[in-house]
Amino acid sequence: MNITSSSRISSFPSQQPKKTPPTHQDFLDEQSLVDLLSHGLPSDQEAALVSVRHATRSNNPDLRITMCTPTLLSCLCPMILSGTASLRTNAIAIVVNLSLEPPNRTRIIKSGILNLLIGLLKNGTSGDNSDAKGLAVAAIHSVSVEEKTRTTIGALGAVLPLMEVFSRRDEEKVARQDAGMAIYYLTFSADNRGRVVKANGAVKRIVQVLKRDQDEDIKSVGMRIACNLARCEDGRSALMEADGVAVMVSLIQPKSVHDMMYMATATIYGMSKGKSMRFRCMAKSSNAEEVLIRVSEEGSGPVREMAKRTLQAIRGDGEEEERDEWYEYAGSRGAGGLAMSEPMKRRQDSYNGNTAVSQPDWMQ
Image 1: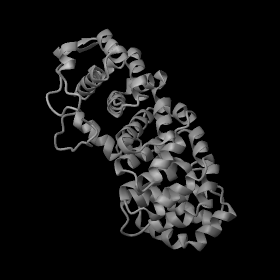
Image 2 (image 1 turned 90 degrees about the vertical axis):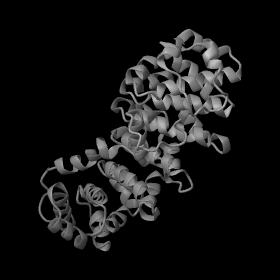
Image 3 (image 1 turned 120 degrees about the vertical axis):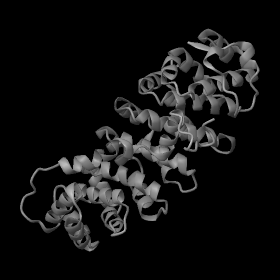
Image 4 (image 1 turned 60 degrees about the horizontal axis):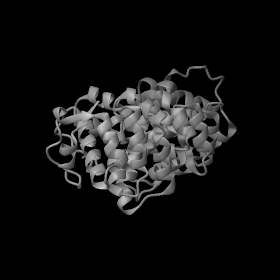
């Protein structure tokens, strides 16, 4: 691995540069970077981190994969724990950049960095730590995209701090989207669905976001989480306990965004599994029948079938045929493009040279 020469690194300003990122030819060996981060003055450490941050922002995926070594990751750990805001912010930004490449995500997990980022969220951040907080959430989101990391991230205790960010309307929208999408990915794991259900007030918070939040992008993310939770018995019970049936019905409107209507129908269908008397009573009291009849008549494909089968459950008509493919399709519907939040799209587009896409300020 190559990193910039000490003279070149030292020439970087102590503040985050916005011009002339280093070129590949400017890089030096890994050991020089390790020496700077381990023993250098704070100003030299910052300049070194800024140099690596610029390098990992290049549109060269192979470079990000090459640079993501156990040695570099171990050097970033004390920087993340640093009391100096600029060191902490730049170090976490490097993790975000590295995490865009799938092979790097398991390396980041093994390095122990995710533990530090989750701890940062648990301990709370404010003031000059707000950038670090947003970046920490972005890193967790990015790593959670990888299927084999999800159970581990949940076991590390990520659910509650992520939920705290997602459900608070005074948080930055970008951070809320990243936090919500991280939870969404995590809930593809059955273990994590159980963790969300057991987390104090987590399901109620999700339903409250859907009920009260005015931001359609945030509500869309919340709907995806609810749809995944409705795939398990405990999740269905928790959603019903939080008045989820009535809220989902209220989101199925003639002028609703298609994906919102789709996910709301899928979530109600999930809650209908088992044909419990509790569900039937809640569905009837929230006027679900009338709404679902309209969907079954005007909808098409999976959403129409889910509406029909939910109506059967409400009315107690016969035995439900085991046909889960519509619901499984709905639950995994976002695993491709739909599942990627706008912040993540902007990050990936920016690395692909799409200059029309605006970057968050902290992606420097």
